[in-house]
Structures are given as structure tokens and as C-alpha cells.
Image (cartoon, rainbow, N blue to C red; front, top):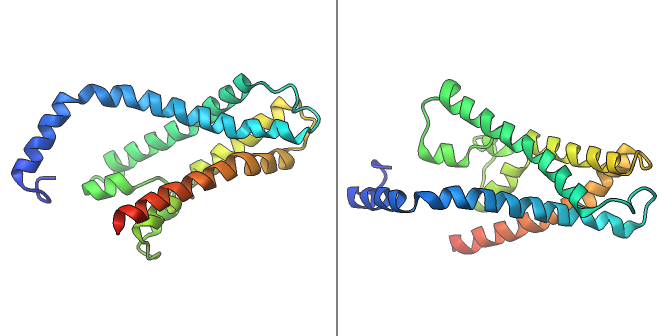
Length: 180
């Protein structure tokens, strides 16, 4: 940061970090909890389809399924740590902030990206694919295998996928508005 910003800006930033250190520890579980609730809320719409086996699914089951799926993103965090600690130890602050393991954003040298495209490209990654797979498997299990696994992947797409598409649209809209 010191090479990109004046010394007084860096000092003010460091002082505010010391003053408000506890907010990070409070905000992280709160934001993860909100994310889990929103994903479970989106998945809850499969009950409206009135398919066999889906009528006995409770919201708490969907929350538990979403929490299991979130473990994929913990693994992604470990992958990012290992990458920057042992493999690519020479990195900038921008690289550290924008890097997401095994995503299309990492190919930005070959893909010309605008700032608003960075978030959607970051979401297209292998870990997100695993997350969708876990959600589809969980719906298949919760329906007691009364629906097929490809159909449960389709149900995941029309519930969580539509919610994720809406979320990406909102975030991209805010990024575009902040740019101009």
C-alpha cells in the first residue's frame, strides 16, 4: 500500500484498522449467515413445484444442506492461501484481492475484462461448480431419491441459479454505477 498511496493515507488506514479490528470478526459470520439463509430461501422454492418427495423437505434441512455446501468455499480459501504462501509468493495487493482459485478471472490476460465483468468471471470457477453439485446431491437425498440426480440439478438451477443470476446482476449494476 505504501508504494501506491501517500504516507498519511497509509497511517490513517492503519489507525482505523487498529480501532475497528473487532468488526471483521463480527461481520464475517453475519455475512455468511445471511448468505446461507438467502441460498436456503432460493432452494425453498422447489416446494412450489409439487414434485414427489419434495413436500416433506423442511427449511432447516435446506439450511443444513447449504452449510454443507459452504465447506467448498473453505477449501477454496485454503487453496488461495497455499497459492500465495508457497507457489506465487511475489504478488501485489490488487492480485491478492482479485484472485479467485480456478476461475475465469485468472485468465484476464487472454480475456479483456472491464471492471464490471470481474465479478461474474470470478463466479465462474470449479468451486462454484462443486457447490452446485453438492446442492443438487442434497436435493436428491432430501427427496429420498424420488427424483433423478439430473432433475435435482435442474431444480438447483431454477432456484439457486436464478437467485445467483439476480445477485450478479445487482452487483454488476452497482459496479457500473460506481465506475461512471
